[in-house]
Image (cartoon, rainbow, N blue to C red; front, side):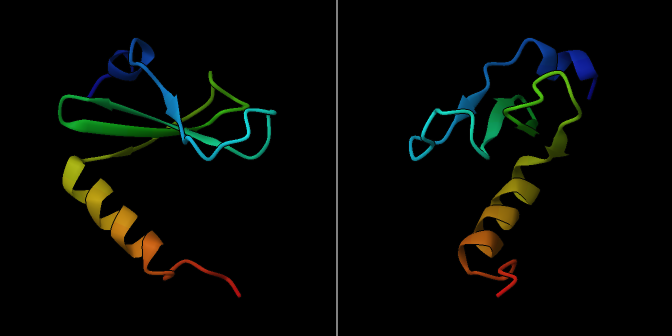
Length: 69
């Protein structure tokens, strides 16, 4: 994957995001890649997942496996 693949991608925020510049992430899906970045630092680095790894990450997240408390 080239960094330019995500440079021109359409980034989306969650519909649950307040839009007030809070703690939000943006997600972009391009062929074979899912990118995740901090909405406050759009020009910063992005986490990059394969579609399969992204699905596993989402399932694990929803199951509460990453909860700290």
